[in-house]
Amino acid sequence: MQELSNMQTVLFSTLLWGALVLCKGAEQTGDFQVRLVNGKDSCSGRVEVFHDNKWGTVCDDGWDMNDARVVCREVDCGSAKSAPGNAHFGPGTGKVWMSHLQCSGREGSLKDCSNPMFGLYSCPHSQDAGVVCSGVFKVRLVNGKDSCSGRVEVFHDNKWGTVCSVDWDITDATVVCRQLGCGSAKEAKEDAYFGQGTGEIWNIQCSGSEGSIEECSQNRVVGNGCYHSEDAGVVCSGGTEGEGECEGKSGEQCQLDSLDNLLDNSSSMTPEALLNVTLRAVDLLSQWKEEVGEKQIDVALKIPEKLASALVKPTQTQHSESITTEKIEVETFAIGPEANLTDTPQLKARDNLLKIDLLSIAKKNNGSGAVVFIAYANMEDVLKAEFFHTERETNKTMMSNVVSASLPNTKNTMLPEPVNFTLRHLTVDPEGQLTCVYWNQSRWIVDGCELTETNTTHTVCTCNHLSTFALIMQTDRPPEVRTGRT
Ligand SMILES: *[C@@H]1O[C@H](CO)[C@@H](O)[C@H](O)[C@H]1NC(C)=O
Ligand SMILES: *[C@@H]1O[C@H](CO)[C@@H](O)[C@H](O)[C@H]1NC(C)=O
Ligand SMILES: *[C@@H]1O[C@H](CO)[C@@H](O)[C@H](O)[C@H]1NC(C)=O
Ligand SMILES: *[C@@H]1O[C@H](CO)[C@@H](O)[C@H](O)[C@H]1NC(C)=O
Ligand SMILES: *[C@@H]1O[C@H](CO)[C@@H](O)[C@H](O)[C@H]1NC(C)=O
Ligand SMILES: *[C@@H]1O[C@H](CO)[C@@H](O)[C@H](O)[C@H]1NC(C)=O
Ligand SMILES: *[C@@H]1O[C@H](CO)[C@@H](O)[C@H](O)[C@H]1NC(C)=O
Ligand SMILES: *[C@@H]1O[C@H](CO)[C@@H](O)[C@H](O)[C@H]1NC(C)=O
Image (cartoon, rainbow, N blue to C red; front, side, top):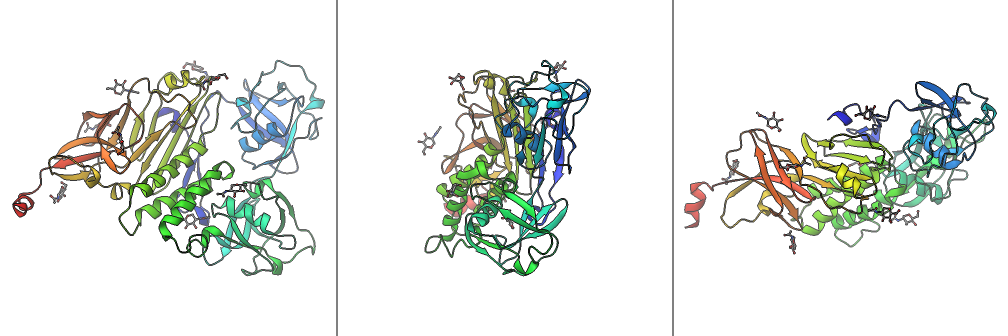
């Protein structure tokens, strides 16, 4: 689809993100850009914005940490540390494009903040605004007994380093566990408990409420302040489920519940951590030992939806995000009052399409709306065709991936017209009767969805509600089965 075709793709090739591709949102209003100039590194400096084909600056009137947060996010520099004004990084040149910005801090771009008033205000360059951002701090755990314990290593300025354990405690460990989607912190380990690392050593101090260590204070250890023999480590609950909080309960059920609980705090988790929790839930479901019940399926289907809602960010214009992994593909599309769409957006996941009249939905929601489309890779083995009960006994086969659509953070979810799912057939040339079905509690049912078009490779299901859908093919039972029964 057009709107989403120019998405910038970032490949996370670190240990943690094997097969993950996260596509950064694509904003389409003109050529607005932001850069930082004259700072001590690439993540601090005078804020310059590109508008109307010219670079200019931002006035420090009303400039605060919320505005700085948006800038740091927009230039991919982690979280904001300070928001200096008065041309702290030297005066710029050209127009002072923006002033009196009133960002909430959650916007994806400065241009989405209230009051962007381009170039309407006169302000001298001696008042140019600046920011100091944390820079990107990734974290990983090394040498532990599982992926949720080990020596803490942080990635900054393209290098991995370790953390000094002199002032390291459970509040710091809590943030690391949360950032990794590994639950709560059980122990903060000192003095190279998980062996010594190499590289720079960092002092990291958190209050415990931060969502990631980017928001904590970080200082490089200089001189002989700390040695690798003092490298810090953590043990998180995510790695000890089954021994700890899940002891004595059905292991899988307890793990699924604890993943579900983790996502109750999704606002403080990074998309990577959210995705990890989602993938663990999907894995858990597909490896369920006993017959998987409706309760498990309902929880496991809610987890990706929580992930998707967390990915949807408020916007004035339009914004999309997509996540592609082997197991699941998620695409979101959000529009705001200044969206410049002429046609209804089409979302795509694992070669399945969703067409929805988001513009009309937004009209009934003060101009804003968002839709999430999810396609699962192997969920058809869990939400099996045999959960579709028909009067006549037929041989039923799943003919498409399981897909799911929802309208997160939207008050009025009434659909002005039916939505259309174009589902790709898992095998070409279906030979039986095709039915569009949706998952209602523990079964596939047909209510509210009908097949409107089909060819050898695709079928269009037109549905008057949003939920979890698939395509099922029915064929007559082979004669042996029938004679066996008489
Ligand atoms: C909005 O859309 C119209 C027509 O589709 C186009 O002419 C205009 O340049 C667009 N504006 C922006 C800011 O993209
Ligand atoms: C994320 O999940 C995968 C399994 O799905 C696991 O192998 C990996 O170590 C996890 N990473 C973290 C940080 O939890
Ligand atoms: C959610 O976060 C709050 C504060 O950070 C914490 O007290 C609470 O235990 C967390 N809940 C879960 C389920 O992690
Ligand atoms: C979906 O298809 C139906 C029937 O072809 C049509 O009436 C409806 O407008 C379509 N919905 C969208 C959002 O395109
Ligand atoms: C639209 O905004 C008004 C005023 O802010 C609010 O009362 C109303 O609930 C909003 N409607 C929707 C559907 O969000
Ligand atoms: C059911 O249909 C599928 C697909 O046509 C076929 O592969 C399978 O052998 C059939 N099973 C039975 C028991 O008829
Ligand atoms: C979904 O299932 C529940 C419980 O089995 C039932 O009460 C409800 O009517 C079903 N919804 C539809 C639309 O059939
Ligand atoms: C079948 O329909 C799909 C979706 O409408 C289309 O992309 C595809 O080209 C069609 N295939 C054939 C063989 O007509």
